[in-house]
Structures are given as structure tokens and as C-alpha cells.
Image (cartoon, rainbow, N blue to C red; front, side):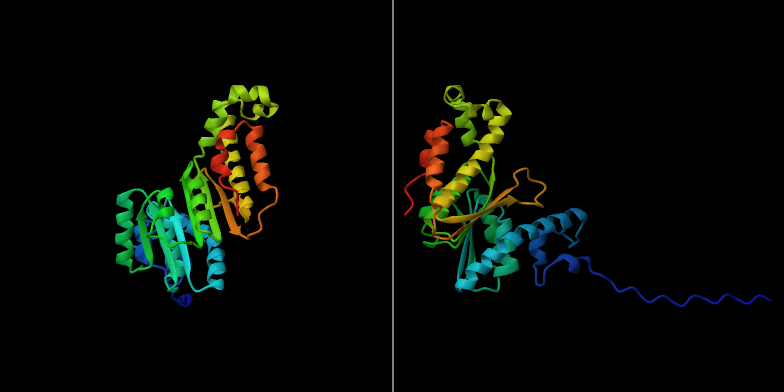
Length: 294
């Protein structure tokens, strides 16, 4: 008579692993992530939302040291986010880093009234009292009494065309310590290059760089950011220019981080002026040079 084969010992119960616990930060608002469509309405995290959350964290990794720098110097912090849209960035920064810092306040600045109202409603619903939202252009916000006279950090992510330049002017007027820019759709410089193309052919062989329309567009976009960097350096900012790796859904992937050191680069203004003259862009002097830095 055959003996029955010994039965295998029962396997230990596998501990339940919450997929959200693997990726969410402690205390992070589930309701906020649902509103931002990072989590589904039933609180699930699919592959696409996991990718989105990774992108959010990657961007925050650039900004977190700036927050720490300001809060290491003082008990208060003000941050203005221009072209805020749904205030995606402001809400995430507040939730992750600032909701337990009573001296911190975030201002979202946006021209679309329906987005401003939705952001106000969401902040009230989530209990985020130190978030304010203004329906104003960047230029209007510089004079707005709803904002303090100085702002510690200014952000402008994917602010189209000259809105990035307006954000720079706002930051300079508000004596911002840090500026975070992801420029987008820089068309103005390319348009001026195009307008003076024939005259430039007789001025400089460098005009071959933007002879063809696609080169005009790409060179104009690159040149715009070069001029912005020189402008910031002339006002005493130290720059880091890199790729915003992880923001795969955007073709505009250049990240400019500026920190005020009060030590202007000695020849930045002269080089900026020389570039404008060499490339027949003198009509842009007021935008990029403006008043002489103090």
C-alpha cells in the first residue's frame, strides 16, 4: 500500500502591500491628488498616474532646497506662482512642505477667472488657509495691493512667450531671492529676427544661423533664454540652467533657477547689449535691458 505523499506545509500569508504607501509621502492629501487627477476618483494609482506623480516629485526636488534656504534664514516664506492655471504646483508644494509652516504663504496668479475660483474653492475645502489666488496679469500683479512688497520665491512654469519676461520683471521688482522658470513658446525674438532677416544678411554672416524658417524658430527660442540669463546675471543672480528631466509630456524642457547673490556678473549687461546689436535686435533692448541695475 502506497503511503500518501506528505502535504506541503501551508505557506505563510502574504502581507498586504498598499501600492499607495510605496509612492505617497507621509501625510500627503489623498483628496488633493484626486482633484489633480493623479489618483483616480476611487483612490487608485494606475501606471499613468504613477508616472505623473514621479514627475511631480522630480520638479519638487528642484524647489525643495529653495524653500529650505528661505526658511533656514527666516520664519516666513512667500511664493508667487505666475500663470498658475489650476495651481497644480502651488497645491503640491503647500501640501508636501508648507502646510505645517505657519509663516509660509503661496500666491497663485492666473488670468482665467474660472480657474481662480476653482482654486479658491479647493483650498477652502482642503483646509489650506495660507493659499491666495489672484485674477491678474503678471504686469498687474506687480502693482497689486493683494501681494506683499517683497516675494521670496517666484515660479513661472510654461508661461508662454513674453509672460516669462514679465515674471522676471515681477521677480526683480519684488526682490525675489529665488526664481524658477520653465519658459515656453518663445516667439517674440524669432519674430524680430524674421522681420529684419534681409537687413541682417548685409550686416553679419551670423544671419545664416536663422536663414531658414525652422532655424529662425529654434534659434530664436534658444537665444531668448540666453538673453534672459544674461539679464538675471546683470541683476546679481547666480544661475543653474538644466533640463527638467521627467516632464516628458512637454517639449519645452529647459529649467532656469536663479538665486540672488547681490553680486552682478561684471560684463553681463554689456554682452547682452552687444548680442542685440550684433544680431540686429536693438528694438528689444528695453525688454531685456530695462533700467540700469542698482
